[in-house]
Length: 98
Length: 277
Image (cartoon, rainbow over all chains, first blue to last red; front, side):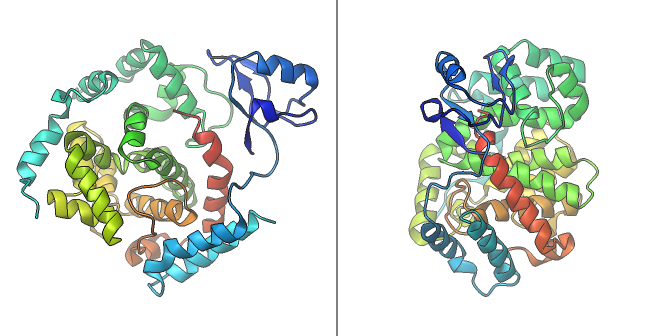
């Protein structure tokens, strides 16, 4: 569920979270399909970002993500259970790029 | 090394309200939650009288941290659902969010991640009150905020030391203060009359085998803390994953798929959770 700036909205996207007014009132519900008209209205609402459906957008490359994983675990290599945990996290991170 | 007397430190922490840098909402809040016999109705009224606080509380209870189905629209409903201890913890959490971010860029994200991961693990382990464990996860590092408020220069020095020597912030705090954020957090939790199990979690999240009152809950938050760091969400004082406590790990006996579930849940919810502040 990526969070994107309103300016990046394109027709056909679906809202993954409702758009609410400051007082919590729901203006557009979850699952609403974005049209040109809605983009215009949302732009008038003084909202910075909205949540749309779809896989999360990764801000770093797969290689960078795996390198920093190795760095994070560098001090605990060989300690009990740490290799098991690292392996699961590694598979998880690789899964984000498929 | 350090010339700070732990007794003086504790005294200062317990009287944190006299500091001018403590935000007003936190002062008012602590005056309310320190009362020995505060009722749900009083707490509910306190929140409702503050529109900013109301919005924050409602955002929080409707977030992935608690995972309630449906929307909770009123403060009174929220307080009934969560109970006194969870509401107290949550109020403390929302009123220190900004301070967290000022103390350490990323501590807020780390704390939210821990709250989410703690709830998932607690549910998997059948803990009776997963929301309480979630609040414990949210507040486990509150001692860092308090130390940084009370001793900004010394805390910066501890953060620099952790960075330069690649040691944990926990050890760097010991060098600077003869005490750690875990001690500080637990003193405050005690003063604010949090339940014993929550105090234990805060005090022993780095050394979960020492918890007498809440070994399971403490192990849960210990593991949640570690998994959030392993995934690389937020920043809590050092950039490396600490060693897991084997006793806690064996107590939890999380399977590979349990851990995967926690990671997936974090992935799905971290972005929306950041919107809470």
